[in-house]
Each structure stands twice: as C-alpha cells, then as structure tokens.
Image (spheres, rainbow, N blue to C red):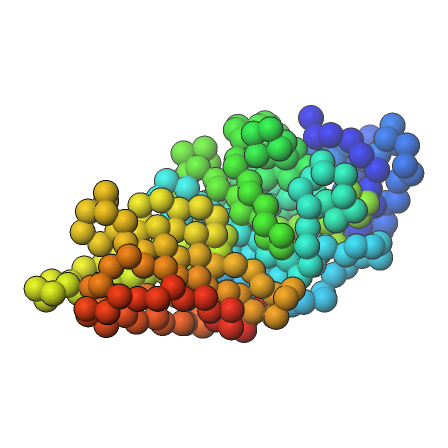
Length: 339
C-alpha cells in the first residue's frame, strides 16, 4: 500500500462509501492517522468516465512546461519545466525538469517531491483509468487513459527505485529505477514490465509531501515516447550527442558509446578497447544561467561533435581538424536554454 502522510490535495477523488466525492480542497492535519491513503483514491475507469471532447495535444519526445505555472499555495512550490520520454534500448526513459532544486522523497527536506507519472501504454484514451494528473486537478487535460503509473512516494534510496503500478487491480508489477539531479528526475521503465512496444503517452502530477499537485505537465495533452535521436545522451537525457570521425586514410564513421552515466559518456571510434572522447553536460543554470559542455579527447583524427538540446532544439557543434591534437574544451556558455 502507498505510505500515509499528511498532505493537501486539490480537486482529488476519494471513496465516500457510495460513489465518488469530488473534493474542492482536502486539507489534512499533521497527524498521520488522518492522512490520505492515496492508493485508496478512487479514479474511475475510462469506460465509466469517458474522455470529454476536446483538443488534446500529443507532443513527441520532449515538451517545455511554462515556468511559474504552479497550482498551489504552500512553500515551496515544485515547478515542472520539462517532460520528456524516449525509447532507449529496452527501456522508456522519462525525464522531468524543475525550475528550482528538488530532493528525493524520504529525504526529509522541505523540497522533497511527491507525485505520479501517468503511463498510457496503448495510447488509447478510451481504455485504462483516469490519470492522476486529471484526478488531482479535477480537470481533463491529458487526453489519456492510464494502464500504469509510477508512484514517486515509494522511492527507496536503498534500491533507487519506485513502484510501477498496474491500474488493473492496483497491483505493483515491479520497481523502476529513478535517479535525481539537482533540478531533474529520470525514470527508466523496462518495456518488458509494461508489456508494450515502448510507444506510450506520458503525463506527470508533481508536488511535495505538504501539497499535491503543485504542478502538472503538460498543461494540455501528453508527451509521446519515440525512438531516440541518433547517438547517445548526456545531461540526464536532455542532450543528444552525435560524433562523426574521419581518419588519415579517409575512412569515416560514427562514434559509439563505451560507458555512460547520467551526465557523461565515453566513446570509441575504431575499437571498444581504445577510448577516444569524454563528453559531459553540467547544469550551470544557478551559476551563470547556462548549461555547460566539457569535452576531452585523446586522438588526432578529425571529428565533429554535435550536441542537441532536446527541449529547445538548440544545436552546438565542436570540430577538430585531421592531424590536430585537441585541447580540452570547457564551454561554460554552451546552451542559454535554462532551465
């Protein structure tokens, strides 16, 4: 069952013995025995509450959510600025960005987040259940019908994961890895767990332990996961990187990733045992309102590095000519696309 805690929920549903009661505002005391057991929040099946007519946008891969469009009254107001979803190998990778620093659930910090990530795996609003983003705001904005959702309050630092809950029977079908950056969250959902091809629609309702939600994304519609851009990603999945090379014989090719982390990647050109380039993206938004790119190479062949901000579509290119021994690049002005 979902852990209990005091919270304020705006426009949510709860069981009242008979049918559903729409709550204009539900404020709970600090006594955990009176806290809302949100796994008991009743969200009707789409068969019982069909999607109202409307224009529900479906944005591919990544969407920027407006800064400052929070819904609540408590402090802090967790403010979503980005929602992205893409198919990466056997997983759907979901990225959330925030306008200010966040902390993981259970950290005890005032900015510890809570919430849900809605997953419409068959991309059919007539099936599944009312998404959390709709239920908690009392508005039909997503154009989705949930088959699954991620429950962020179930995050455990021990395994670094949250519950993946199937709507049919409200059953936990597995744990999904979630990593936290200063102002970002990334969830890696195994496609096998959701019994799908990876093409899904996603929405999110995020808040704090005191108030949920403080923001939803998108404000209208959903984000659809599609196959990723060529290459690999850095900076918590925000930046797509493509590296092409040309050697002294005129042969050409594309770099391949050897190892990667949340922010960085190491690639090779010719042999996986011969690493050529290290590249990383760092969030410098709080320092100089920029995303930074760092690049270091141990090769003298020609190469071109193309870095694309998937949120804004901005591209930055770095070039090393054939025969040149490159210096390390520390580009602290790389992307003026914060947050």
